[in-house]
Length: 339
Image (cartoon, rainbow, N blue to C red; front, side, top):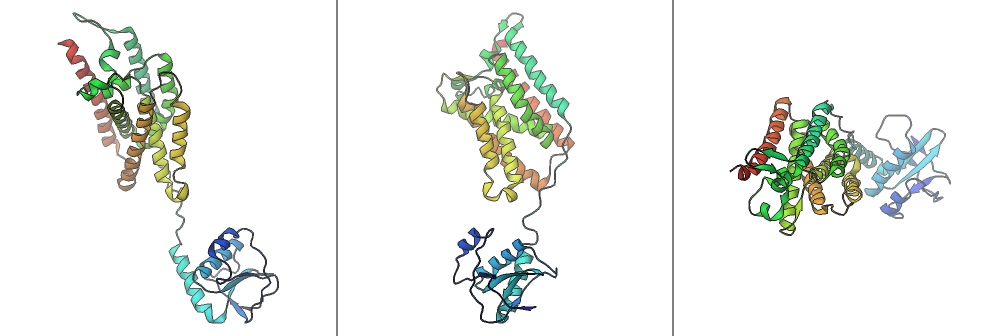
């Protein structure tokens, strides 16, 4: 539809305004009074009668990037994008191509997966952990052996781990220094663990938690002094924080775009707030647990996005494998004592 610009026309010229200037002035463009010599024509790749102000500005940016002169005009019928007559076909083709390439962008939010109702089994495991703590405090009495100090045979002793007692990487996760240590892990970590188990399924979630805790303890043992000792599930707890952060960063990466690091930064903030307090806090174990949790979270989210979440059978197998690993570790811890 022919039209003639007036003094209130908003002009966007490739030879006058840089692309960065245009982007900066997207929301509040300046009014220019430069006259257009020829009669310019409206261009629109859509058949709708009217276009929004933002949409017309976006099209103007597209044409400006292709060195096609254009201007935006507003009249009683709405916002219009005008181009010289000799550029009408080129402008229309460019806008049609842009619309086709960006038809599904940005992509919609990923479909929310159905949360798995497994809160009761997860809480039961946490209660079992608390019960085991009471057993460790009382000491385990074995006929002919006396009372066995579980912290002595199960703590993450750096020198002994390096010498080959790998089971301490696992057994240390089930021990706690005192009641405060236990309650902090159950209350803070319980929230993340319950959410993670509902999101991924108990089997996969506990496998990843165990993996992040074991790997965190291993790296911590290698880097600490040979006399370093630690106990507690907090390595796995901060692994859960890293897992949730990585899953969120991957799942919503298209919408976060350049802010993809925000979930991981939030996890690091939690690590700084909760993982550095206390005189005997093992910062290395917390940090490495978070780091390995993040790496495992990235890997698991990539695989679940490609193949889907594990089914019930695979979740059961993973849960049994995790439980079996803990039992095997404690069996190996007791073996030297029982000889």
